[in-house]
Amino acid sequence: MSRNKEFDEIEVLEKAMQLFWEQGYEKTSMSDLVERMGIHRRSLYDTFGDKHTLFLKAVERYESKVNATLARGVKSSKTATEALQFVVSILICGEEDSPSGCLMVNSAVELAARDADVNKKSIEVFSTAEQLLKEIIFWGQRDGEFSSDYDAEELSEYLHNVGVGLRSMARTSIPKEKLHRIANISMKLLEK
Image (cartoon, rainbow, N blue to C red; front, side, top):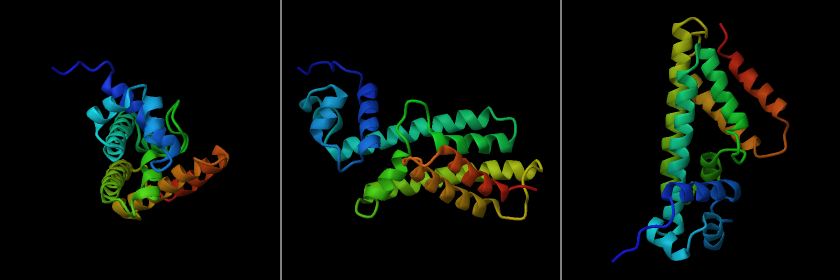
């Protein structure tokens, strides 16, 4: 007869996600995970499989949290400009009590060239981000907030690329003011 789990699966997955986010995949050992997650090694394997499978589940958890935050922020925005500013603030500052940078960007840089699963997930997540930006740009163009001089899809690809750079730079000690200046210059492309 199997025993009931003595831990909340989402709670321990969240702890693993934070650790991978802080340290990266390669630097995070199974011992680190067992210690951070507060569960026995056997429970980790029984529940999440191996380290790679756990990592992919942590990435999925990260993606769902970020998408939910962005959706709430964009939905509550009164204008496309406000929505875009919200997205940029998440890119630069992240969420409260989160490691700096972006787990997906970090993972793509660390692993995508040699890990097909991470490469596929990175492309999927980046495509979703570009689609969100494209919708905001269309909204702003439709309502006359943004210039229609450029194609919304091309602008979304460009702004996403800037966002990936901002998320990478956010992991350093570069002042947030500099990151905001970079974002503001990029947003000027949208001005009417």
